[in-house]
Image (cartoon, rainbow, N blue to C red):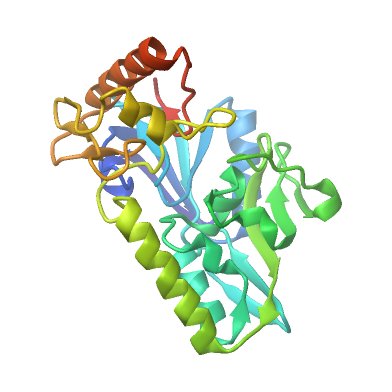
Length: 286
């Protein structure tokens, strides 16, 4: 595999939450073919493999992660073909939104404020109240579990809420179909969406976004608030006073603090509403 292979790399600094121990092996492939090679080698050697995107929805254990963690930051190319934009898995959503705005292509403004990369956004069907990643996707290129590279069109996409349903495949690039619009109009929508998001969610603070999935017909944040959990704290991790479905690392938080706070919140919501909250965040190494 072309690219860097390092041992015992701390993951905490790479996480939006800034929590987590080291990866046993850390891989940084140069290109799609290198991702495929790494996938095949890890499978042959029976080494667990995880893919790290923007680290915005992952909680890593304090003891770290056994096996390999692959970071796709080198897959950062953006290519325009008319009203279609193809972006590598390592492109950040803010970079993609700026690039599409600059060339007058609209549609992705609904993803404003999500601190993710394209690959991770596709894998989890990241979104906001206004829209989801798959709304404008027309194809994705993936590395299949056997190490082959394949292109999937819309007929092979079956996303659900916050899950791209890719199983064990790895996204290496995605193509979006957008529409031509005035760059200023796009920027105005971008700004309005960001202003609304900043007013209702602590997007600039260290978190993993929404911790729990919304149960049918209800908002998890509202349930947590009604259970009296706003500003509830365990160690250095606290329930946000702005949006109760966000847990904030106040500076020295640990994964143990995060899990303890989750347990307390779930218990209180169960006692108050009779509802079992299910995690939306991902957990590695537990």
